[in-house]
Length: 312
Image 1: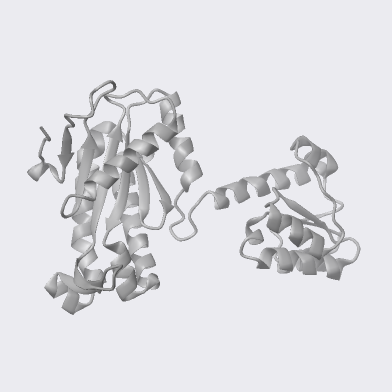
Image 2: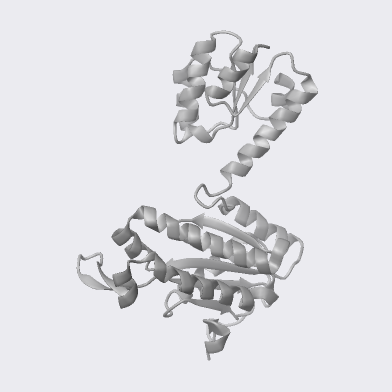
């Protein structure tokens, strides 16, 4: 265990009580916590439960070293440990188990808990990977319109269900069209990023919009669905008509631009998403500008191909 910890090149801090452990874990989330239950077992397992029971520290991978006893092995897992190793295990097996523990932890940490899609860290890594491989790709930022008003009227539970529906649509369309060349990530809330080959932009975005617009009315009550709107309050408390939700997609490609890092792509995708949200209905807007081009003119295509328009 000591050799494996040393191989991680991370500082190791020894603590002897749960209070100190929680203080350290709450101030700065540890990479891993190892509990030695071969002595003071009740106290140690109580500390495991406390660490894993907190919403902030519960994501920290925890390992229990237990005596070579089936009851102690079972007690470690019942306390909430992510892995339990018995002291008489072969060293090579311990190393394999520990490496797998960290891989599982990283995977769980980098996905959104609601949709199980990769989060911001993995999105940035995927953009960086495609830039490094010199691939032509499109980064598409999808965001819901009038989602906050829906949440206020129908509850956050119903809002979360809509987010999961959008996540499923994005995943099914992107993966169904682009297979392993498509990537879908969840930034948070109702914000998503999907990355696809440039040639697939029109087909994928059109299909996403079509499926979303077909399904979203059924997330409303029959009265609101028939009317096509409901009355909601703005930030000043005044009533106004709130239309049914739509989806806006901002698209950035590296066909006409040269990007050197993921932050450039992300910033431009955010800009294009914001532009798309100024247009009525569900639309996708593609950045047509080139490197070195002046601020204007900007060539944008908005909406489905059937009603596409080019900015002058």
